[in-house]
Length: 297
Length: 275
Image 1 (cartoon, rainbow over the protein chains, first blue to last red):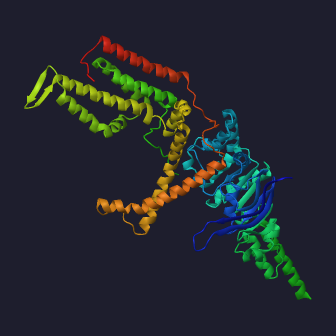
Image 2 (cartoon, each protein chain N blue to C red; image 1 turned 45 degrees about the vertical axis):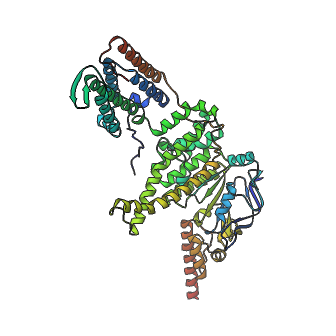
């Protein structure tokens, strides 16, 4: 299958000041995002993940390397206007600050904004907006003012806006970073559903390990490079490597790692607290049984 | 949960006037203003005042709010009255003191002109500011001014600017409150001192507010671009305004009012106002 996003050896530098010279934010980044996949990009602040997001939403353009979005090459600033527009039609972004991406005062009008830009007929926009609002569970808020919503609800409105545009891929740029735990859970549920049920390609840029653990594949960025790449099991199965890059692993992994050091056999890659607890209990029972046998002998 | 912030002077309501198509409301106010200026005879003024009272009652807006709308224009009202009373020449001298001469015509004229200004305020507040949300007004203006696009007037851009400004007012009010709290926590004092000192104390609020507003603007622009916004070209609207028969019925009522005023001027002239 064709990848929806393909990056080849991307580099990007910020101008920086006179003393430091240009600051290199991306240093030879290559990856492919297959259509329909759920990929998480992890990295601490300054790892280059936000810079990468800016290249993907075509705000900045790479200094060198090549980038394809939705089958169109968007490498240089002088990429054809219609290519950029077409790429944006297929690939949407949901940003970090819910306040700064909502355009309209009324919920349904904000959801409609993107479709209105596409020039769809009003009846079609109405249908899509109602459907998108139902998808994110915000139907009853349709006529409310966006200002009075909670952070999680605002992000759901923003997601509804991209759903209404019927996009193939949505990039979430730390979309849960400013939310409380309840809002974060609501938004993550919708993101997962979007990918699993609707088949929308999801690219989740985050620094929450638990969110990344939901993905099919994780790219870990560090120092402007792809540092680790693989399934959550592969990436979090190497906690030392993550810690070396100044990153965390899910709490369950950290617990299992410490227990392993204490000679309890608990797998590192159970990210769900319940199954982790069960594994620990089993390991303890097994250890006890083992100890009992030793003593009898 | 905060209650809905309403901007401008919009008064929540569900009257017939509230529900009129905002475009028709703009037209109605324009026509009504012309009608008010057409009135000359006292009889015509009585008719218009009666109509204005009926409209106010229809909207169920508390009359005290209407009076409040007149407050900022008090100076103009008083000024016109004074000019008319003291400098309007006439035939019936009532009062004379050195160079001051007051004629009956002057007093009558002053009263009617004051009444005219008050009617103008009532008309615009009843049809526009008090019964139409700023957002509806912006939408209506965009559609009414649409033909100007042919003359390259950036109608859509202005209306988008207005919409975004309205959308960000509560956000920026919140932000201001936060900054004031933050600066107060650092020992800033906004409540004591001379006027100049207090003015200067505002600087540590305004600068962070401006910086943050620019950052927001930048992020919003990116978000809008990512949602395929390219300006007004080729854009459609989900909720286009639709005018119903009742809107035009109301419009005809105002036209009828105008006809009534003209007839009363002509056939029942009484204490005619000049100017």
